[in-house]
Image 1 (cartoon, rainbow, N blue to C red):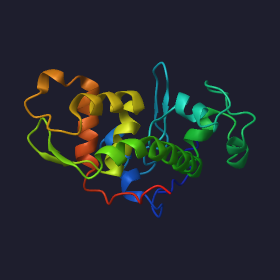
Image 2: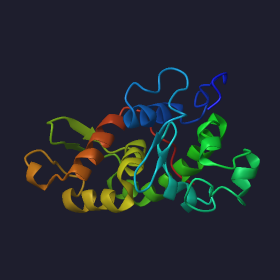
Image 3: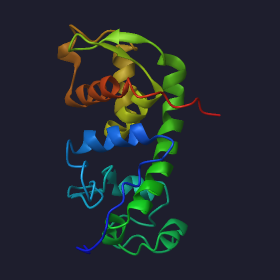
Length: 195
């Protein structure tokens, strides 16, 4: 990493700036407040996570931003060419590329959230902590960012958009993470309806 790089807060001015700030802080609380704003972060696991938003390697490949999973899987994509990315290290050092990737990822999550929002959007329920939770589009996107569509659909299949208080025995760690994201993102101004 270039020690002389001057990092930009590239999420500022994005139409979904507040959601991006929320997601970055949810991934690494407090670590995204000062340069390099989390853009240089990498989490090693079976599916490595990259940058400010901890975008998974599989998600980047699934969106065709990356040709293949792995550190050198960037060759041959329009995205990599447009942002001069040849490696994971290049991606971690390029905040504009990460924001562009996040724009594509958020569009994908919004499309996944559409069906759930049509069914449950606007409802309020009491969560396991006894707090009122409004089901918002950004809340669904935040939950999808954390746990993916399969787990979010299971959560709503189990609780039907109703109260979870008193049903703690049914709350696995993924469901708790989903509810935490729904609760945390509910005050962010909701995204406009999908076209």
